[in-house]
Each structure stands twice: as structure tokens, then as C-alpha cells.
Image (cartoon, rainbow, N blue to C red):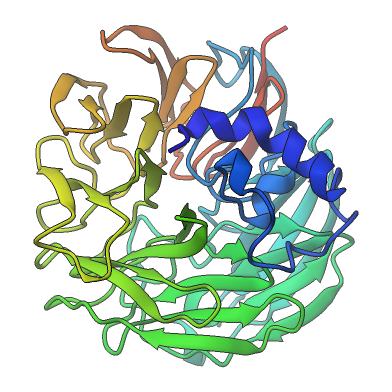
Length: 445
């Protein structure tokens, strides 16, 4: 089984192999499910076809918070190592995505006397200046529900693939645009009650756009045709908890030559066939709900956290069928497990940070604790591994840089004095970070 870093080493070879060197060239959105890559021991979604200088979806090219950046900044502030700082309009906690020197963001723009309108915007990576801003969905008071104080009406992160931009606003709608901001299709047919607003981001696999719809009742996962926005399959959840709402982002993995979509929900995690939406396996984890972290994958296991009220971090082997709760759960630990930030896998070590700011390093294969240290503050953003360092961003605007390894070493503490809940993007040697009022690009001289 390949380690996560192996993805970076062969990504460019894969792009060359299928003739897909740049966004918008070659095959559209990875139109087939199985490619002749078995000899490489590699799984991929269309997001993995980009070169090193891209951050096309939530948590980057692999969807697992891994960056190929060799020299990202170690230190920054609102004034130090700032390439540019640009004001933002609207409200949103979706993460920035960066493809071909353009940054894409979603936001909810307040409307006087009504609900927000939902926008997507495009900015110049070099300067931060806006190229365009498009209203994708108009104000719709009937569709808006109460949201959590840490949420927004624009929390899911977009995806760029095959010359198209996919934006998702949970129960409020999903859309596809070209990279000049022209809307290609909209889908508002998937009505459900999200409880605390939207949250989970979509994933691309082949020609499908997949996302979870885990509302207060009748939760399901759905796949839309990425070319038309029409529904291809919809699968009810087979796991449940007293509180059914969750907000996790699916991850696509390869198991024995076949692709699986792994998707946590309230009460358990399930794996699905991309072709049909049929469930392959499931593992139950009790009453965990409002599950947010995206899983990570390696060593033949998925690693995840199980949600409120008492989260556990877990490892589950992925080669099973049916209910694997009693046979394929490799380990489970509660100390330091997050409710909101996703985990990071780096070879034999698994890293995480709790919502209360406890960073931990575990043995990935066993769950054995290696170290656990308090960073400080509250955390929602998911960490990133880059250049042998772990980048953690707390809600109060403080970024912590910790040396990756089996001994804890804090390298830097960086404060921009602005609220930050979105996860950062790493592009080249830059960090693009969304704050409550500004978008930043940090880069060392």
C-alpha cells in the first residue's frame, strides 16, 4: 500500500501517461472509473491529475492535507511575509482553491430584508485582485435554516477540474461553471433539513460529483453527473444515530484495483461503489453525530474521527464486505480526538488536533500515542503537512508550525489577529489563507 507521499512522486507521471497536463486539456473530469495504473499501486480522482502548483479541492490534490511545497513560509503575521492582503465581501468559511494562477472562493452576500445570495468569485493569485464575481443562487428565504455560530451559508469548498468549477452550498444547491464564471448547470432538487447549515464539500470520481446529504432525517449520499448536474444515484444511509445530521466530505480510495467512496455519517462510516452507489462495507461507531472531518487513507486503512459528543479517532481496514464493525476496526482512541479538523497521515505517523487545541501524534498502525501537546485556542481548520512541517491554524487567527516527527517541536507561532476557520491552501511556496474579512497570500522572501 502506497504512503500518502507516494501520490506526489507519481502524480506528474500519471498526468503525462494520460495526456492531461493542464486544467482544461485532455480528458474531461476523469471520465472513466478505471485506468491502467495497477502497476503503479495508485488510486486517483480527477483532482489528482493536476501538477504540483495546484490546490484544486478541499485539502489539496490528494484531498488529505498533503502539500508538495518545499519552502512555504515558516513565519508570518498581518504584516510579515505578506505577498498581498485583499478585502473580502460576503461571508463564508469555504477554503480557497487555486488552479492555474487563479483563486476561487464561495461566499454568502447579505441581502437587506432577506436571506443571503450565494456567490463564487475568482481572483488573481499573483495580486489578489478580483477577476469576476458571480451570483450563483439568488436569495431564497424559504430554503435557509438556522446555522451554527461557527458555520456559514458558504462553507463547502469548491472543486476545479477539467476546465470546470463545481460549487456546492449543501441543501441550498449545487452548480457548475466554466472558469470564466458562466453557469453551465444548477441543481436545487436535493431538499433536506441540514440542522446547522451546510458544511461537507463534494468529491469528484470519474464523471460523478459526490456529496453527503446527512440532515435531521432520512440521510443519504448522492452522485450527480458532472457534465449535466442530473442525479445518477442516491443511496440512503444504512447507519444511524439518535441525531442524524453530519457534514463530512467523502474520500475516494482504491482497494484491490477497484475504487471506493468512503463517507462518514452519524453512527458510522460506509464505503460505496462509484458506479452504482451500492454500499460495499460499513463500520458503526455508536452515537457519534455532526461528523465533520474528512477521512485519510494509508496502510490499507481509513483514519477518521467520529463526531460529537465524545469523539474517537479510529482506523478501519478497507478490505471487508458488509458490516465490518467487529472484524475490521484496527484501533480506536478518544484522547485528543477532534470534532472538526481532519487528520493528517505522514508515513508511519498520524497527526491530529482537537477542537480545544491539543495536537497529537499517533502510531498510524496501532493508535499508540507518541506525543500530545497543547497549542492554544480553538480549532476548526484542518492541518496541512508541507516541507516536513505541520501547519495548524486556530480560530483566533494564530497559525502554529510544528516539526513533523516523533518528537514535538514547535517551530513558530504566527498571529494575523483575524478570525480563521477555513483551511489554508498551499501553492508553490505560498500559503493562501482566508480570514473573516481578508484573503492573504503569505510567502517568504
